[in-house]
Figure 1 (cartoon, protein in one colour):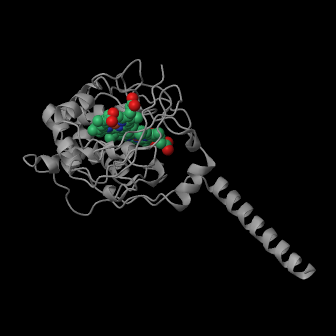
Figure 2 (tube, helix red, strand yellow):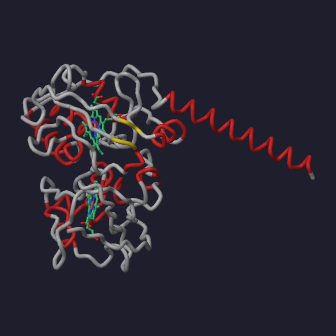
Figure 3 (cartoon, helix red, strand yellow):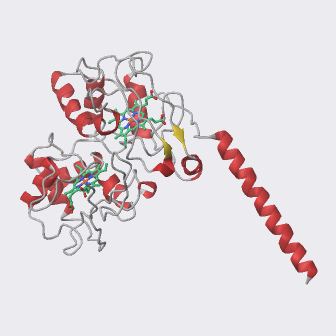
Length: 319
Ligand code: HEC
Ligand code: HEC
C-alpha cells in the first residue's frame, strides 16, 4: 500500500513539475513569432478602390481601430475583448511613419491581413481581424484606403499602448491558434447577381460570423462554416462598460433563430439597429449604415440557407 502511495506521489510530483515548466516556457516565450515570407502585393489604387476601401474599413477596421472622439484610426482600448484575453489595445494604423503604419509596404499589410503575421514576424492574436477569404480586389481596396489622404488615416502621432496579453492568450497562441497560409491563387469577388453567394461573402468577411458563432476562441477562419455553433449565437463580447453581452442566434431555426423574421425586419436591425417594440441593438452590435439594403438583404438570404441550430439566447439589456 505504502509503495503504491509513493508511486502515486511521484507521478503527481512529475506532472506538477512538467506543468510548471510548460507555464514558464509559455510565459517567457509569449506570443510566438513566425518567418515572414516575401510576397509581392502590387497595389492598384484608383478613386474607386479608395472609396470601396473606405466602406470596408469603416465596417470592419473602424470598430476596433477608431478613436471614438476623432474617428481617426489611431487605436483604442478594446473594451469588448473578453478580459480573459488580457488588456488589449488596437494599434495606430494611420500613415504616421513612427507611430502608425505609414512605412509599412502594401505587401506587409496584405501579409498581416491574410495570415495574421506582422512584419516583425509576431503573430497577431485573435483579437485582431484576419481576412483569409476576402477577394484580392477588396484587400487591394482596403490597402488603397489606408494609403489615401482620407481624414481617418492621415498621419497622426498617437503612440501605441502596449498590449498585455494574458497567460491564456499566450497559451492558446502557442498551442491552438496558428497563422494562416498566404493564398497561392487569386481569390475572386463573389458573383453579386447571386444574393446567397454575395451574402455568404459579406457574412464571413465583415466578421458577422466571428461574433455570432459560439466562441471567439473556437472560430475557424480558414473554414468559417466549420466554426462550432456557426451563427448559432451565444458568444460573449463585452460592451464598452465591460459588461457581458450575448450574441443572438442568426440561424434559420424558427424558435430560437431568425427563421420567422422577414427580410425587412432583418435589414432594419442590421442597418439601423432598430428592432420594433424593443430597445435599440447595443454595442458591440454597431448599425451597419454603410451597407445597402441589397447587401444586408443578401446576408439575410444566405443566413436562411445555413443549417438551423437550436440555441435559445436571452437578450441582455442594461440601462
Ligand atoms: C476585432 C478588433 C480588430 C479589428 C476588426 C481590426 N483590428 Fe487591426 N488590430 C487589432 C489589435 C488589438 C491590434 C494589436 C495586436 C497586437 O499588437 O498584437 C491590431 C493590429 C493591427 C495592425 C498592426 C499595427 C502595428 O503597428 O503593429 C495593423 C496593420 C492592423 N491592425 C490593421 C487592421 C486593418 C486594416 C483592419 C481592417 C481590415 C483591422 N486591423 C481590423 C484589432 C483589430
Ligand atoms: C463585435 C461583435 C458583432 C459583430 C461583428 C456583429 N454582431 Fe450582430 N450582434 C452582436 C450583439 C452583441 C448583438 C445583440 C445586441 C443587443 O442585444 O442589444 C447583435 C445583434 C444582431 C442582430 C439582432 C438579432 C436579434 O435576434 O435581435 C442582428 C440581425 C445582427 N446582429 C446581425 C449582424 C450582421 C449581419 C453582422 C455583420 C454585418 C453582425 N451582426 C456583426 C454582435 C456583433
